Amino acid sequence: MEVDSSQSNVLIQVPATGGRKIEEKFNKKARIAAHSHVKGLGLNSTNGEALNNASGFVGQCAAREAAGIIVELVKQKKMAGRAVLFAGPPGTGKTAIAMAMAQELGDKVPFVPMVGSEVFSSEVKKTEVLVENIRKAIGLRVKETKEVFEGEVVELSPKEIENSPLTGLGKTISHVMCTLKTTKGSRELRLDPSIYDSLLKQKVSVGDVIYIEAGSGTVKRLGRSDIFANEFDLDADEFVPMPKGDVHKSKELVQYVNLHDFDSANSAPHGKAGDMMTMLSQILKPKKTEITEKLRNEVNKVVNQLIESGQAELLPGVLFIDEVHMLDLECFTFLHRALESEIKKLRNEVNKVVNQLIESGQAELLPGVLFIDEVHMLDLECFTFLHRALESEISPIIVFATNRGRTKIRNSDEIGFYGIPSDLIDRLLIVPTKLYSVDEISLIIQIRADAECVQLDELALKRLCEIGMNASLRYTIQLLTPAKLLAIIGGRKIVEREDVNECLDLFIDSRTSAKLIKEENKNEGIGGRKSGNDVEMNE
Image 1 (tube, rainbow, N blue to C red):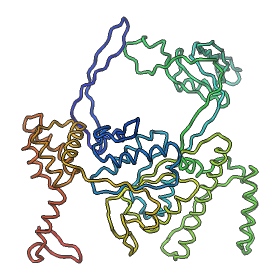
Image 2 (image 1 turned 90 degrees about the vertical axis):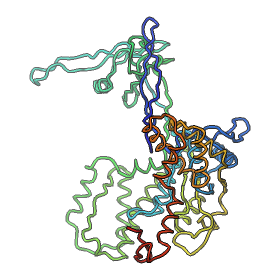
Image 3 (image 1 turned 180 degrees about the vertical axis):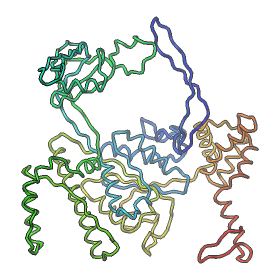
Image 4 (image 1 turned 45 degrees about the horizontal axis):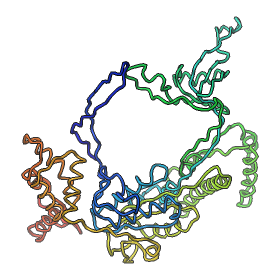
């Protein structure tokens, strides 16, 4: 990721008293990423056809239209449990289309991007990484109705009382009188001193708009009333309109979470530790008897009954195993199964709670999108797991992307198209992406140059188009900022052809680099030294 150091003047108009306006200019630095110029799929809103140059996209009309259909199916919840594959040469916009799909879906629908190599870890099982990302891509809209008091603070006065001289304390706050006002009327509330502490922490004062939950006493400051918008020339506060209706009202709160959030929230149990004291006192002096599997199952049943009745609480401890290398394969297999069973049990409990919320109408399932780039990096075990995951009841839309054609499937002797097993390919909707033409490369370079604030003359743009056709589009785009820097050193604001040629001498592309290495190492006696299967370059 790059940071563009060019200065862009932004005009700010601040309303002031007497109708006067203050104009202020400040310098803004824009953060430029690989796909910062992509704002959407660039489709016609009426018929869904791809526009040639829209939302930062050029070309790939068929692929963008296919992505638009997928986005529409996701919004209608008719695409869950299906998979799509974007296949094409490198630099043809597969990842850019996926990022555009995320922007079209919005913030409410989960979009989880990952790379195929992320599943390989020495600490976490491959399928566990996939399960975690799949559950991140399954959203949940939870609705909750709460009784709240909402309005503008008109009066806020704490009431104090005298304490007994024997306590050695002075005056303490007995209660707080708070008057809230709406467009319909006002109401005086008598608040507990603990709520007054929350008001002080959020720096609530007269003129602020707040709401207080009737059940929990939670206070939230929404902002300053817009009546005081012209009180100061400059104010960092956020102004909100006065609430409508009555002060006491029922408010529906909507929260967007995913299943992984539920798993994380329930992974650590909470409660009182004193509930286990009776059971602990009974097992302080255990008898030296043989403990069988049947006895353990009976104990587990009793423990589960105590937990369900609220008499006991599970407190997972720590098992420290020193010299772990002394364990054999059977021990490691047992430990792995023990850990996996706990995680699986937790997820099953979360699924039960989620199903209850959905059946009661308190929640709504939002199947999102799991985007796996470089899918050919997955092995046969991962593909088998994904094939089964697509058939499950709760499954997101899985979007694959690869630049491979016919290649070997990882950790197997099988050769498959796109590096994917044939039984999984049958379940995929394949969307091809094609190489760009000269005119399309020229448009992409211009859009990218505008995003990075680089000015190009006609000869420089023509030279960059030639490089894009002969080398790669990614390499061409990477030359924009160095060429701009060389132009600034030369005392120019516009990048010329000579700046681009100088960048070519300083930075070579991958094809030129591979050609140089082959020429150096074509003769072992001249080019370098061999070490096993590796060949060292000349010193």
